[in-house]
Length: 601
Image (cartoon, rainbow, N blue to C red; front, top):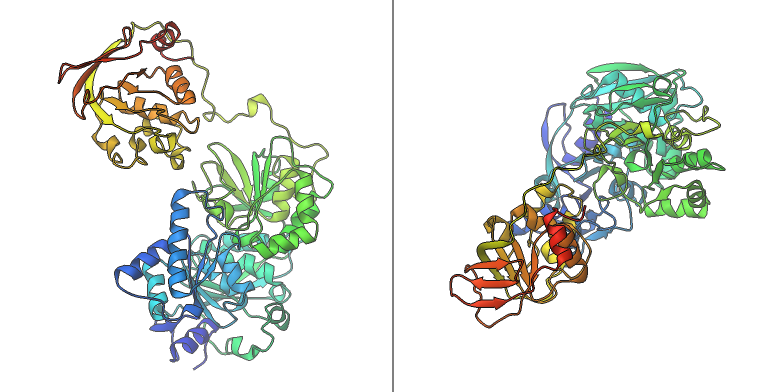
């Protein structure tokens, strides 16, 4: 029976000649879990008493957060490291780069093989005529434990690229043209084989760019038939090319021709990768930032194009350009070739190898109202931040970064676009408020339930952990109060408005974060009593009009849950439950003045 390429690969790995729609157990040549999802894979295995079937084929790749800058990512990464040490698995740690690219470059997978990962772009393996599939944590755990998982053999489509693109179009423009033609679900569930004169001469980097965006067309995979040059680049020249060819009379559900003759640079508008137009239609659109990298355009060839655009030029004033090589080896290539110096001279930020903007754990995210032009593969709302993201080629992104506005490599203006005061996006910067009217005097005597925490040196990370520092809305801060203080992690759930916190020496030591004060205001805590306060914390509390007082401790004077009264004028603290009097420090005139007017500002 004649077979397409995907049918041949699955048949080889299931020991059975398969047909479209047939479900079979498939042997997995390489099984990978990332820092995103990896810890859940470990959890699934440990809860069921399972272990890896073949450590030599089992890998962890940490590419979502190479810096471990997020506490949860750092914890998950270490869970995976410990599991890997126990069973002798290979870890491509935070200094190595994107897992799918490592799988190709390190020959973890060869043409004709099968690869799975917790990465939805694992189908990038189609660039080397291998079958790659992104999977959830349970699937990957099964692949780790058994070396096989079930697959439904996809039907095949033949995509024929007709003609030759224009001189300024790149593989990214070609795949955007495919998206424009096919839409977000035009290849849903299909394995698509790409052919045409353009494809015959396409290098590995270009094939990776196109294959990586198959997911954006809902394809199971986009497959390229390799040629001797590709096999040589992969160091797989001993593979018989005949085994990687579909049969001449193989069945395809349909053949789709896509005209790319004379193709001009394209760009995808925010929110929908398939919403593609010519760059010309958006030329002059002011941008705030630019990003070059991702599994789609983080190869050395992409960065060579970027360097060519930036040589002798500067990023436009006020624009931020972020560049992230795909892997450590690519980073090293850039360094040795002088590309990094070119990037730095142009004013770009060069980040650690990894996924970058597609993952929240690395550079590439943007803020509300920020306009970004990116080489990524997705621009879904919120995917790369809260701003607007346009998708384009490395040449278009680099040219736009220099121009300060969307443009093409052949039309960079002599003078860059600059920001003006009227360029501020409506709603992104709070309007200036009028001075509030005078309010009635604030209370200076408080009664409330005591939270007695007999600890010294409670630092701001215990009060309000640094993993929540991106929260800027005070109304969201209270829920995180003390969630890093042993014994009091449920404080926010149990505290009530009017409660009084009583604690030891040097309360609020550590960092200068205002959130460690504002979280108490959000919960409605009326007073903080401490033997002493950290210097910066004391200032922050006074300036935020949060009543704080120092007191002289007395043995047994306050117990958890006692009702106490604190007088800001006299400094008197009384335990209404026991009747005991406690000496406190009254507000100074300056402190009272700031408190009564509602804060320093």
